[in-house]
Length: 274
Length: 254
Image: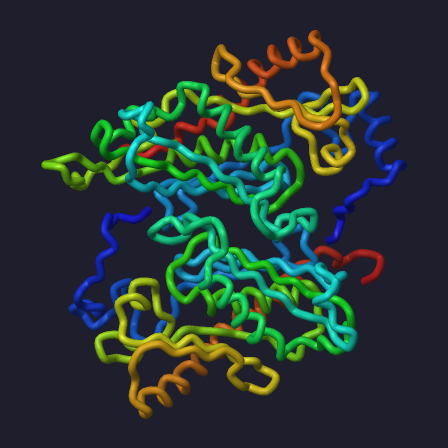
């Protein structure tokens, strides 16, 4: 039950490290292997899009709500997509209640940046009337169980949520908003699927998808978001440092891993036709 | 997915055939699914699907009290945090806890406290975190029900379980287990919870209009519904241990 400690003992850290030196992980994976993924869409009836994603024991639920608002003055014909992440105290005794802390803000921002800089959310399609009315999408990520690597699980759940979304279509008539009775679906508002891939680093050993004990003892992490052929965002966290060769190796590796995961998860299967 | 764009209420809450909008009879409960021990990091946990309500609850404790000044030297304290996900309701809820969530948290604390032996745990706290991921009426009742399961799953000594249900009145008729739309558009809403060790009411709120006769009939009907839900709770708790027992059958200890 209570298997999370704020401090991991030296002996446990050494055990994880000595295994990694032999290219072994304490859960039996090899260095470049993900834990098992599951994705379920349309899990929340009240949301316009939703997904529940598990990566090993890590579990997140993401939901999409929308509002109609005025666009930013510098982008008069583009909708807005915002991200929030909440680390629920029920997910881990390490999470405390209260306003968002650094960790949850980082999580939301890393997921946001990976998606924002790819050609993913078609913000121009989220415009109802230039300068007057655009959709504001809220993607809210809730962590239900924390067992390491929240970023990758949240990234996939955000994409699955966007793909599974159905937003009432509005049109502008005589200065008023009218609903057409049709829906904007993931097919219209999503184009590219940028995946975020996170690696942990202990000493000079780098490995994919840190599990909870690995995350608690690692020196640092690096999260790389990529589309089919481009890097869209990188976040290094923790006190680890990465050599230029390592970064180049990881960015190549991320391309391979992300296209493999994308094929495996086949996220477009969650779209609605109308 | 919400199919209506404006939050409109229907004129009638009964269909032509006398059934409710979701096809239920007057005193029929929505489908209920409960699970315990689903969150590995908490001391105890439970998950509840009640109609379209989807609720997670986790219990930590007995553990040190933070902030320290809340600790009581002669007894433990119980704290309940009821929170709704932003996407669990029709209009997106603001992420920060609102007045409603704070009030319900307090009501739930008062409702659950009578069944705990807090006097046995001086200087410590029990914390119950309840997150409503999807809401469709009667969430405070569903939360009471799931929180008491999570407390039991955590192995916290309890006098009994607590079970709750919302009674109500729509189109002049008394009904059991209000759905979201019946709650908003109906005439009365009576959430109530029963502590089974003394068979008394531990949560009681009322909004709307009812005469004395209706009110007392409502309480009698509530007990029938509560008995049914209590049986599901007990089965859920037992199921976990039956599963453990089956796993160890044929082992050395048998």
